[in-house]
Length: 185
Image (cartoon, rainbow, N blue to C red; front, side, top):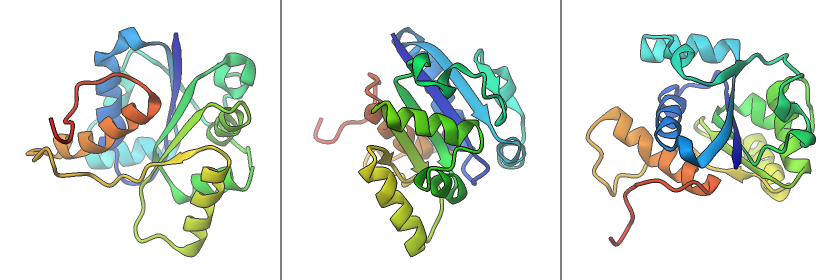
């Protein structure tokens, strides 16, 4: 069964992990384990942007950045996929530099070394050359950079529907089956 770790950093865009977690709850039959890492900044940004702390209400285990006993901190945990959403440029840079100084960067390092799926939902604009080179490094190492760039083909009407255009793409990249807008259908 599929095992997923979701990391939420302190970049703006808390709507993205909220929509992702909501959608993962709908397709629970497709995964057996779901671990969530939240940075302290992510918690503050979530509260600021969404006016709640509903990240506490999901039926998943929440991990701190310093919990190196988390099962996905080792390749023997056999997690299939890691989604970092939103992925701050600081986190992206540490991953690209091989710096495993917290649970997020250690888990990303594990996913890459085990040749499993790492999806970084980069949430910053504009990009500097350093950001672009870090994205290149992660891509060359086998990771996927999926910028938090919504599409509008499906004519989204709410902020959650706009965010879902990115989240649906992430779930597709993760290999999960979802009901989503498909071009040409």
